[in-house]
Amino acid sequence: MNEILNFLIEYEILIYLLLFTILLGFEVISKVPSVLHTPLMSGANAISGIVILGAIILIRTTESDNYLTLIIAGIALFVGSINVFGGFFVTNRMLEMFNKKKKS
Amino acid sequence: MDKILFLISAFLLVWGLRLQSDPASASKGNKLAAVGMLIAIFSAVIMPLENSFSNLMWIVVPLSLSALLGYLIAKNIKMTSMPQMVSIFNGLGGLSAVLLSFAEVNKWISFPDSYQIIVVIVLILSLFIGSVAFTGSLLAFAKLDGYRWSEKLTLPFQHVVNIVFLSLIIGFSYYFITTPVISFLYIIIILSFLYGIFFVAPIGGADMPVVISLLNSFTGITAALTGIIFGNIVMLLGGILVGAAGTILTVLMCNAMNRSLLNVIIGGFSSSGSSKENKEQGEVKEISDSDFAVQLFYSNKVIIIPGYGLAVAQAQKLCKEIQEALEANDVEVKYAIHPVAGRMPGHMNVLLAEADVDYSKLIELDQANGEFKTTDVAVIIGANDVVNPDAIDDSSSPLYGMPILKVWESTATVVLKRSMSAGYAGVQNPLFFKKNNKMYFGDAKESLQRLSSELKNL
Image 1 (cartoon, each protein chain N blue to C red):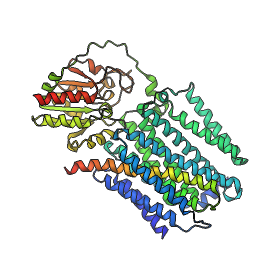
Image 2 (image 1 turned 30 degrees about the vertical axis):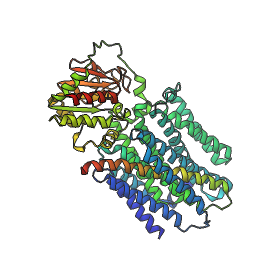
Image 3 (image 1 turned 135 degrees about the horizontal axis):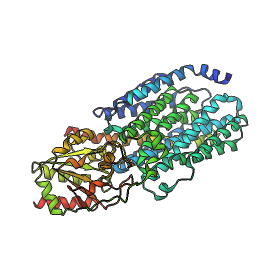
Image 4 (image 1 turned 180 degrees about the vertical axis):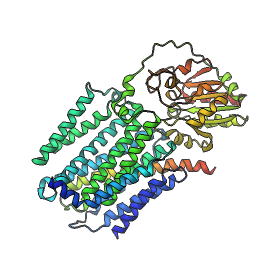
């Protein structure tokens, strides 16, 4: 129990932030027309690749001869950033199609 | 410096996502979010860290390789395969979180004092959710891509098995935290991978978009959990945004199909099956090429209902050709888009956009249902369940209650279809046997080709 309390105190601000961001996320997305569901899903999916920041930090805090951790984190960075880059590129491709049409 | 950059990137991510919920600004929103992400990656590379080492190559090489690979995949993927691609990407994101949590937990085993127990609990949670997102997404991909084995992958007592697995995972996690032996960790990972498969297995292929959206929000949650561990606010923010957005999208999609999320997860759709296959159905009437062309040519108003069949046959451009031929003869042509046309909500809009169909010609469900009464011919191309009258008339049908396009209110309907086989929900469609309906059999592309040349001869 003490553990949990300590955790809450130590991460107090992060936990507040967590709560507000959940509300923000709901608010931002709540009124999306179904036309945009597919691009939005792929766009949001790209953002979820933000987990690669953790991989970068882990690589930077690992001793240069700790190959096991470096390889694991390197693979994590690699697969995670495919999600990021691929996601943004493909979302862009989809949305450009909508744009092209509106101009004509 | 890095703190300011993180702040800017957090703002860009939120604002970008906000803009993406409006068609006019969506493209800009995506670009803003991408810039935000780049800034975040850059700041993570330059931020000052205690005990840091210069492992720059370990960062630059994977990043540039995956940027190239991601770009190539995104550039070359067919628009019809979009749902599959999103699910693969999402799986990779989940895998990334799994590897990361694994590396951190591994560190804890070597240096038990480096973390508090509660941090390890958060890590294992992230490991679990990430694993479920990973294997779940891969199975969702297999189902979407139509691998036969993936549809049959169901166990007896599915829900009991799931609960047993969940309890095993919790039990092993408890043992692992009290006695940190690495083999327990492997068991937890394997069990979590299996759980991801069991979670998605009973859900029917038609519901995969909902599942992907749900798994997407799972990946977001793992990103946020890892963000707490690394004390990185942008990770937390981005992860939670995706978690919340994914959850809302999941609910919106369920609403469009008139199903509850619970119902989707338990997999009622595929199992309730075809309750009334033997019902008296009457005869179907076929229409000839020339009759069809003439009928369309002398109409005042035609509404096209495109479905996935149109997309797989890659016939969107032909569809546009026919639209132009008819418009040249003063026929009003519109496209009625059901919210779940294609394989995902909004998928059909993307596909038609690819074929340069004018945005103003696409009408949504409610507007379309108001216009069928004044329509001469409704042409259904490769769609089935979304025009099934049983959704209104037959309370025993698995489709009952789903909002559908009331095409039969038009003077005539023509269904383009490969055969008389049932649609994705596995039920027969009484529309085909209605008096004012005619069938035009064949692959969507070939059929439209025949129709197009017939129209040119008139």
